[in-house]
Length: 391
Image 1: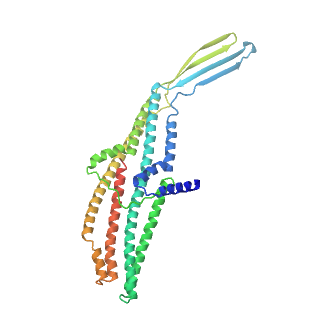
Image 2: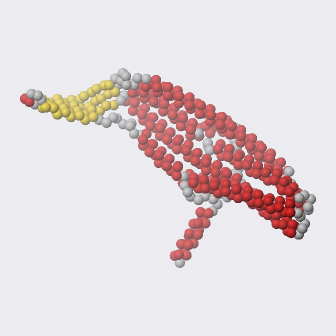
Image 3: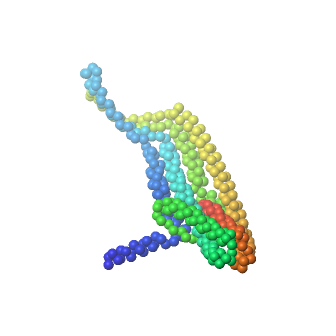
């Protein structure tokens, strides 16, 4: 009984793994299972810790001197001191603020990589849907071609058609079967890539219809939201903030540094104890540091402006492309429905009004149109997927 229960459980678990999945479920799995994202998450956690180091005071300095007197009669001398040095107080505030900005950047960098990986997974799913649709279409074509080839084989054996028509029907079947095999090879390769992104866990996407994607009609309104959600632009804005704080930090480090502590000196019959205080005036050490920090800020601000312009132009091009593809696709579908003559061609072939060669030739145009429609749907969906990655 135990073995029976275990066997049934294994069957159900295996069946669960083989159940077809939708795109949203696959993307959620990739986000959880992708090994690159797991490594990046751990790296981000380490960066958080690293950005919090070096913010405290410098290490205190402990000094002890034991000196022998000469001549011996003057005795020995012991010196002991504990000193703590520190920068101008504002420097510590700026370092802490820079650390916070850096940690925000760490998260933005992780988010950018996460979106790139999920975008790759979505595009793979999009290509899989295309090849699934092509597989369904090619299966219909194979069935049709096989029916014709079998029919013409019977007619050839009965002496009703010649060898040329018979051979043409067999070649037509052979070509379509090879197309189906090539499509299946591409489909399996895409599945393998998706499994790799999913950490080696199996996936099964059987959808043959592309998901409906809404294209925003108002570009500027949509762009405003996309700009705010862009991890790259947010990272650059943080980098500008970091650079501005570094300017202030450079100014603070150009101010005097202080040193304070306790010191004692002991000689024969005498002992001195008290506080020690020092000041370091950076006359040469930080020369040109502020000028360099300001130059870096200008460079980062220029890079941020350039990235924003490129981002705008890229999204505008994507939006324009999506609108054009959608318009062309709708028009092409309508015309294809109007001018579809596959049934008429079949009737003409069955009644002997046209030979197989003409039937195959005319049908090829229709097949090419179907392929073009599926390709346009794939291209449109690919553009919209890239646009929606900034949500």
